[in-house]
Amino acid sequence: MRNREIFDQVSDMEKQIGELYEQLGDLKGRLSELLEENHRLAVENHNLRNHLDHQKEAADEASDKKTSKGSFPGEGYDNLARLYEEGFHICNLEFGSPRRDEDCIFCLDFFEKTK
Image 1 (cartoon, helix red, strand yellow):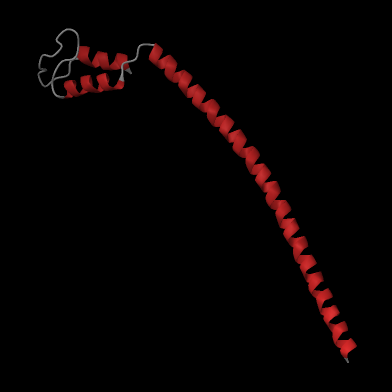
Image 2 (tube, helix red, strand yellow; image 1 turned 135 degrees about the vertical axis):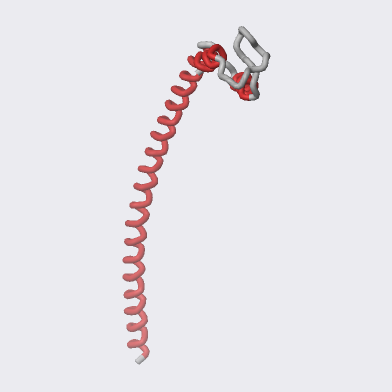
């Protein structure tokens, strides 16, 4: 009887080892898929970063061209727009004098030039 129990234990262990081997095979397959996906995402990330860098460079060049054309600084332009809205002339003809509830074509022309 003792030999039979040992044989049954060996058979059970063999069955468990077979199941573990199947699980190991499944894990290996999933690991392979994850490694492939990780590599694909790393390449995509690299390409996207390069694309973003090129976009930034293009935007910087456009910004440099815009500022080199003599555009007005944002704060000064905003201050002049605020003065005009408060009812004062910003044109060189009557700068600082109060406007009479009507638009000044020279002031409006200044805004058109700065756009």
